[in-house]
Every structure is written in structure tokens, then in C-alpha cells.
Length: 430
Ligand code: XMP
Image (tube, rainbow, N blue to C red):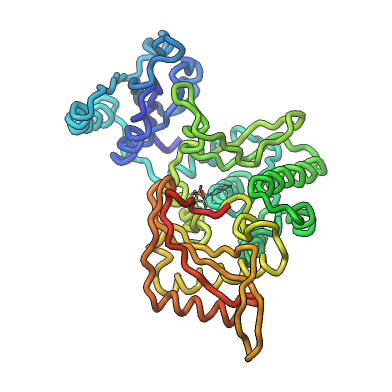
């Protein structure tokens, strides 16, 4: 292994990720593991230089204080025990002492080398993937999102043709998105890629379905069925690749932290399909995943793309989806993205997109009365997507976008700008 490793054992502190990032800021790789890891599992890691026992607010689980296994103390690694105080003021004071103490522990007491960088991380993960997979095959659902793209690029580097990627086009992707996945992964990275155009199947199932939750359920459920059908056609697959990243693990609940929401990177496969998981990004934070993608040579647009919901344009073509309105959303979204990029707003605004409601309004085109759709532009800024404020987009940019949508997008005669913050509105409309 290229990188030295500091292991943080989670004894119920909400500061685990802060400490992990702090150590990575010193240039040393760190990983967070559950408190009840065995001595054998710990010895299985190469290059462990020290262990941090990180206790805190959530140390009491089911009325008992969680502890590490006693044999961990006999392994001979340098150890640092941290227990976070409760009061905010004490926490802040401790913060600065902490930092210096942590740096001394990592660099001096453990003697860890500052060799954490993406190049070394990738080399280490490539070696670990090869050790795990050997000559077997790995299946991966490649949506084209940041996490699945980066994990695909990593797996291609590690095992090449032993990786089988499946890209399901549900017909609700943005303009040229599926084509781009095929271009990058099949044509440029020479991935073993199965492309499934399931547009008709999805749109058929969604016909006349207006309820947002029902639409989401249909899209999610159908995705699993299509992926499962493709998986069953393949033989000799033992592993499933997943773009799980560290925040997914935390939000899904750890042994000391409660679940926020469960994450299913491939939507949850049936129980009779048993695969061993390959999750090389599971210790990374989002910005690190992007840096990893850049280092692996993925295009900038793919790595720095804005968040896009799993159900895609399906939740932006409001109410019961119709093909003409879906096209209006897809085309207007492409225009918005193009104009925002020209104005440099793509680097400033957190998320921006268009939606089309399921009603028409009266207008005039070529001296004749028309009855057509409306497109609503939404552009918001946020830190964590829990609350959001509206971007004050320059009027000239809005005029250019509006003019292009009205001239270039069929069946649209009106463009509006959504002024609602979250709360009370959510970022998406459905
Ligand atoms: P809301 O609409 O809840 O959205 O304010 C918060 C953020 O989550 C994104 N979003 C999704 N992301 N699958 C995803 O991966 C989904 O089903 C989904 N729905 C909403 C949304 O785009 C925003 O960034």
C-alpha cells in the first residue's frame, strides 16, 4: 500500500468525519470504522500507523456505553482517546487544542507519512480491488451520475473487461446524457458496457400517472426490474460494484448514529441475487470523489455536474407525463444549462433546471391564438439541500434564456421564474 493509515473507531461522536477530514488535511489518509471491529480485521489493513478512539454524544446505545474490544489495546498501535465535551463553548476551546494535539499524535507519535493524495489513493484501491475480485466479474449499474461514473472509471482501471456496466436509459435523462455515457465509457474508456434503451417501457408504465409518489415508485421499481433482467442474462458474476460514498453510510445509520434516510445505490436488488459488494469510494466525501474522478481522467462536466434526481426529468414534467411536455422540459433544460455556462453561472449556482406544469395557457404566435405549455426556471443555492435560497439571476441572462426557449422549444408560449426559497418550497417540484 502506498498510503499510511490512521483508523478512527466510532464510539458515538458526531465529530468522526471532522476528525477524519482534519487528518486528511494534514496529508495523512484516515478511515472511520465501527467501534466493534475485531483485532483480526484491524490487522488485515496494511500500513496502520495509529488508532483514534472517538467517543461522544451518542456513546450510550440501548442503555449501555459502547466500547472497543479489549484485545485492540494489545495490538501495539499508538492510540489516542478523544471524548467530546457537551457544551458548545468547551467544544470550541477544545477545537483548537484538539487540532494541535491531533497533529502531534498523527505526525509525531504515530510517525505517519503525509502521503495521502488521489494518485496514491487510486493506486491503493486498484490493488485492493484486484485482491478482492481476482479473475471474477463485477456488475455495475452506471447511471452517469458522479458516484457511479467515478466507481466505473476506478473499476475499469483495476480490472478492465472483468467489469460489466449496465446503463439503463429510462427516457427521463437530460439531453444527450445517455449518449454521453456511451461515448465516454464505451468509446473512450473501452468499458464492457450494456446499454438498455427502456424509454418505451418506462413511459408506458407512467402513462396517466399523475401522483408524484406513485411516479417515483414506478420509476424506481421498474429500474430494478430492468437491471435485474440484464443481470440474469449474464453468467459468472460474483460481485456488484457500488458508488457508495461516506455520507451515504452515515445517513443510512451507523452503529451509533440513527438513520436519516436509507440509500440504495442500485435501488435494492432481490434477495436471491447474492453478490459480494465492491465499494472503493466508501471512505470518500463528495469533493474527494470528484477529485478522484478528475485524477482518473473523467470529463470535467461529468465530475462536476449538479445534482440530478434518480427519477430524472420524470419529476420535472409535472403531473401525468406526456411526450411533448417531456421534450419541452428536456430542451428548455439544455438551453438553460448552455446559457448559464456562457454567463459563468454554472460555477456559481448550486442547482438550476426547468420544469413544465401540466396545464396550458393562451398565447399568440404568428398572429394566431395558441394554447401551449409553460416552462418554469428554478435556480437555487444551498449548502446541504436542506434549505435553499433563490439565485438573483441577472435580468439579461433570464431574457436570453426566455427568448431562446420561446423561439426554439416546441409547444411552449410562456416562461416563468420561481422565486420560492426552501422552505416552504422544496427544490424539486415533485
Ligand atoms: P428537495 O426537492 O427534497 O431536493 O428539496 C433536495 C435535493 O435532492 C435532490 N433530489 C434527489 N436526488 N434522488 C436523488 O438522488 C431523488 O429521488 C431525488 N429527489 C430530489 C434534488 O434535486 C435536490 O438537489
